[in-house]
Each structure stands twice: as structure tokens, then as C-alpha cells.
Length: 224
Image 1 (cartoon, helix red, strand yellow):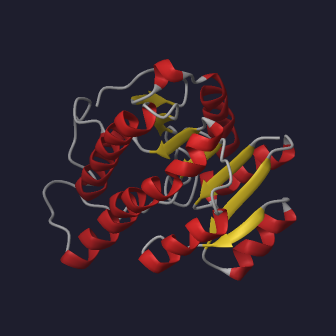
Image 2 (cartoon, rainbow, N blue to C red):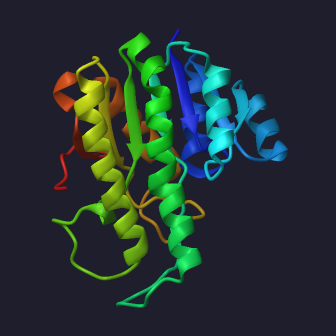
Image 3 (cartoon, helix red, strand yellow):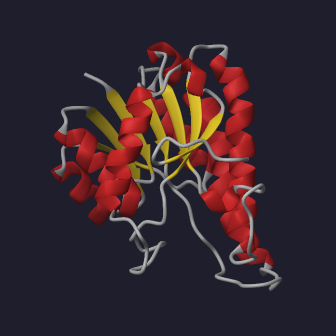
């Protein structure tokens, strides 16, 4: 039985990953911040751990709970969009700090903590990124704080792939598409079930040749 860890499982894409993996018989460990979300996750069959991605002590406690147990798939889903700007509207310091701490700093603190667990299973580390983080594909200026954070996250994944790839761990960044969630909005192209099902196929098919790659939910490689 595969062990799947979903960081940021309280809603949207993270919640759907829990739902689908649990339905297929995986042992799912899910993190969230609130008890109401925890109840829903437990009802789906997940083991729930409390995690505040902005709190280093909370992150450290996650490592204690996992205690070296093998993790086949670790999904870094937690993220925020931040100010919905167009053009060069500058974020406030508080807005910038929230986006960067959530989308970049937390993964940088979590990945080293999960390295032993992933190595034990020769597992896969998947960060949910965005095509908006692709510098090569940037054609407009909307949401530039979010774009900057996802470009930075992609760099984090690439660096992690060098270290963890040598330990038989596959590290990837995945673009889920424009998904109808609280973040994506009601006009988005993809239903969350469709996006997650497609990403699961990409994850299942991934091998060492996928280490250090940035992929669309369809499996297409994206420019960094």
C-alpha cells in the first residue's frame, strides 16, 4: 500500500488528491490547520496532522510525527495567490511576505524534512506550481507577486532534484491547469476532479527521467 502525504489538504486540489488517493486504497496522510477541515479529511479515510506552513515549529513537529516512515508520494499543494494585480501595482510588504513565505519558504523548510522519508521509499516529491511561474511563457503582467513566487518555487524544485535525485527520489513541479477552485474562480477551464486525475496519471508514470522537470497536468513539459 502506497503512502501519500498531502501538504495543504483542506480544500480544492489538495482535498481532491486526498479523496482520490484514499478511494484507490492508498494510505493518505493529510495536513490542514482547522478542526472542521480535519473532520472532513478523516471522513475520507485520511490520517490528519495539523500543520501551519507559516510556523517553523509546526513544520518541525510534522517531521516528528512522520518519524522516518517511508513516503511514496509527497505533494506540496499549500499555496496562496496574493494580491490580484494587473500591471506593475506593487504589493505591500505584508502581502509579499505572506505569498513568499507560503509558496517558497515553506517548501524550502519542508523538503529537507521529508528527504529521509522519500528516500526510504525511493518516492516522488511533487510541488504544485503554475504555468504563471514560467518565465519563458510570460506574456502578461497579471498577478506578478504570485508569478514571482511560483518561479521561485520552480527553482526550489530544480535544486532539490539535484540533491534528492542522487538519492533515487524523483522531484517534479506540476502545473494543474486553470482549475475551478477558490483560487482559480468559477470561470476556470478545468474541474478539480479532472485536473487531479490527470496529475495522478503523470505522477504514476513518472520515473527517474522526469526528475527536475516542470510539467503540465497533461504531461507536456513546460519552459522554466
